[in-house]
Every structure is written in structure tokens, then in C-alpha cells.
Amino acid sequence: MRRIFFATILVSLFFAVPTYAQTDYSSNIGVHAIPASRDMVVGGEVVTLPFYHIGSESFFRLRDIAYVLNGTDARFIVGWDGEINAVFIVGGQPYITRGDELAPLNAYILSDVSESADIFVDGKKADFTAYLIDGSHFVMLEQISTMGFNWYVDQHDAFVIYTEPPVTLNDGEPATIYISWWACEWDDYMLAALAAFMEKYPNIEVVPHIAPYNDWWAHVMLRIAAGDAPDIMLLNYDKMQMIAYDWEYIDLLYDLRELSSILDLSVWPKEWLDVMTFDGILAAVPALSGTDAATGAIPQQGFAIFGYTPYPVLSAYLLNFVFNEFPFL
Image (tube, rainbow, N blue to C red; front, side, top):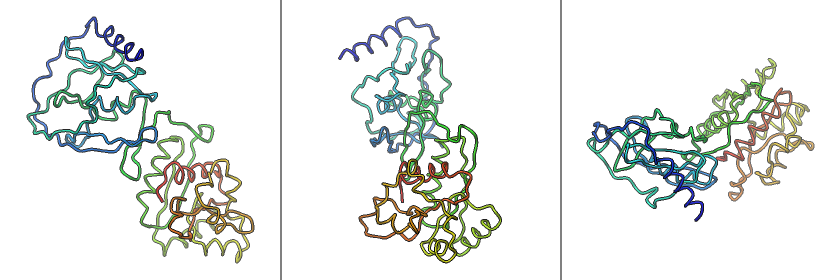
């Protein structure tokens, strides 16, 4: 109760002396607003946010964003000054709910959309593209992300919000990891995971190579022979056996147990990892997540790290991200 009272007093004091020119925002501007909704994941919880498609962009209700970010480091308070027709946003303050957040949107034709009032962020006028619809102000997510959050789109087409700043690996030095697999039904999910990884670790570039199954193994062998092997590669169980027993060259693959401080092996059942173990060396991690254990399927393919990669640690971070932070297989 004291927190709400303090926030209310803060907004009242902040708005007490208007110092900005008044803006007339009442005129309609003739654009179509088409209602839709999108799941948003914040702190592991899924919330469905309504939004409007306007042109090619998505516009979310400002108070809805403040509502779902409340309690995070990106929280902000939203206030309205009717004397000067302006919206004020103050970062770091808890949002005061009104009770109508996340309410479904109505369908609107072009005559119902007006330009938003001016929006001020921490006392400075923001250069937002925003609209006023049914008494609420709508902004694009990337505009309000200046409050201290970022996001990526997961395998379920949901926005995953995170508030920690992007971090770096490899002491901040740029690096490139090459990953190779054959074309299959989860290509799009894999590419989404790689994009999210690069968003989180901006100094690491991940270059994928996807080829038809019939051509893939010959291509990888040529790259290994040329000293240009991918850092991470997808292997069938029979290819792992061939490397381990026929070639007697298991050193071609990195022992992933040596990277278990980074790569969380608990994602997979022990019996799955045993399948990928040769002469005590864990040659690959199954290309299935532990959540698929209930199917009873024994994986026949897995991702291996090339034994002579210059980036075994970075490769382990990537595999851990794909299977632990961004699970989809």
C-alpha cells in the first residue's frame, strides 16, 4: 500500500507544473487498425497481449506492456497530463494497475484511429510512431524497449522478453562458429535458435550449412579433409560408429563430458547419452530433447563438436542454448 501511495504522489508531483506545449491529437488520420493477439513470455510466464496491425507493424497498448513488465528491471510507470495532452513514462517505477489491462480489442475502421498525444520518457519527448485508439495509446515494441528490455521470437511464435543486457563470450572478441546439418523438418526452429543465440551473444556469429541428406556427408568429409571442418555437425549413429571403430579415430570428435560445466547434459536421459558414448567418450548429444523421452524413442542422430575446433567452449555454449534455453526438438 505504501508503494502504491508513493508512486501516486510521485506522478502527481511530476505532472504538477506543465512545461510542454499542448498538442491537439483529436483528428483522425485514416489508417486501418486490425486487432490480433500474441503470446509474450516474461520471467517464464506466458501472457497473451492484444495488439493492432497497422500497416506492416504491430502496435501494443502502452499500459499492457507496462503491466507485463511490472516487477522486472524494465518496469515503468505511465501517467497522463490532461492539461497539456501528454503521456509521461518514468522508468524504474512500479506500474499502477487500472484493472483494464490486457482487455480484448475491438475491431476498428480507419475513422477510429488518431495520432497519439506526445509521449515523454523520463522527461524527454520521445520520437515514437504511436496511435490513440479507444482512449489508449499504442506503440511498437521496439520503441518502448528503450526502457531496458529485449526480445526474440521463440518456436511457438511468442515474444520472449528478457531484461538482462546482451553479454559477450570469448572475452568480447568476435568469433565465428560453423554448424552443419542435413535438411529436415526442424530447419526453421534451428535457424530461429541460432538467431536468438546471436542476439544474446552479439560478438559471436553462427554460420549454418544445410544440405540435402544425400549430399551432406560427402560435403562434410571434403571439408574435414581440407582442414575446414564445421565446429558442430549432425551425425547419424552409424557415422559415429564408423569414426570410433572402423576408423579408430574417435579423437575426431570432442568428448562432450569435458564441457559439462557449460553443456547441461541433464537435458537428456542417461540411456540416451550412453548410446552416443564410444570407448568412454561422449561423441554427441542426441538431437532430441529430454522432454521426448516419454515417446520411448532411442535417438539415432546427434550433434557433435569437431575435435579440432578452435572454439570448443563457444560450441558448447551454442548447443546448451539450443537444447536448454531454447528447447524445441
